[in-house]
Length: 139
Image 1 (cartoon, rainbow, N blue to C red):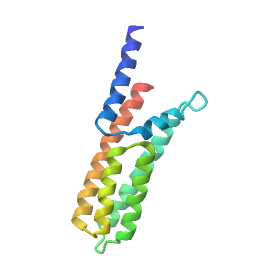
Image 2: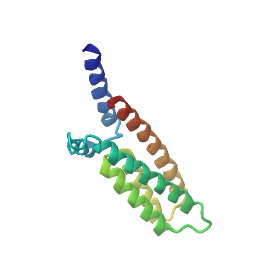
Image 3: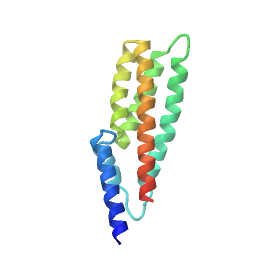
Image 4: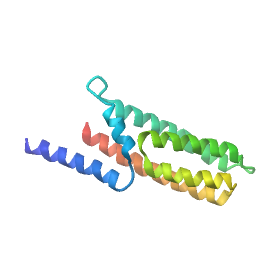
């Protein structure tokens, strides 16, 4: 019994650290509240869809920024989508970088866009590994 209590405590601590470090915000709690016995994998499913969507968008952003002539409207549309989907799962740090990214798109600042793309990719891989760890611990 002690082992289970200890694991539960570690899970609570780990989840709390994700909030404390700014990886997640209250939206993630709201997602968890929508999960119940009838849909025990709800959060994992929603987050998995986010991962797929984010990876597609990151590829689009990389492709669009790699063009000789950059379509800033298209770039901004992709960043806007990523901002929305990261917000919907509570991925706060990605959401914050997307705000800065959209400003760079508005200013048509290629260097700023490239820097933001790197930051978004970094934040995405961090939150992805943190959430995968969280889901593994829960399983």
